[in-house]
Length: 241
Image 1: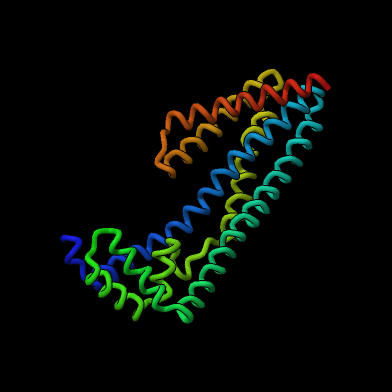
Image 2: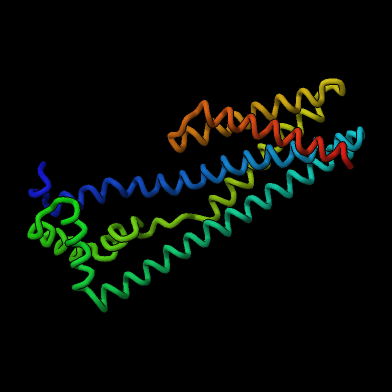
């Protein structure tokens, strides 16, 4: 279909098809928070474990330090995600209120914005005017939010889903190095913890690359290097003090 022959109803069909995508974006936001939380849980817990283990051989003290850090990290990640996503959601709601006001006070200006949007994409002025007429008659607010801000009305980012995802994933991620250190025989504790950390951060690298359509190999290697550097730095600090 040529751009000059686009019909207004084609635009509505496209909008209906993308409604499901908006819901998927919300789910992906929770998954993103989960991946970040898991990675942070792994690295902060293993850092504390090695810094404390470098200073003492008391397994109980090491365990308590790791457990306390795991809980603190999970709560910190959850609260951070909640605050961040809440700010984003609040900003989206402010934009919705502003667009509602503009539709009442400057409808002609909004109409021209929609026209220009389609003209810029190769649609003739007459066709763009017809599209704007129909869209602003049937879905005025949804149209303005989509064109100006790429926001789907009613589909705001959920801070609670991001917070819970981050909380549980950070806790689960931190369990990997903690369990490896505590459950392994004393002579293999450090090796087992390093191995568990490498595997765990490699998995988070894999997931993040898959979600963002990035380079999997590079993400995995990068995460493993960061994990090993975290261990080395914290172990060195523990030895110094």
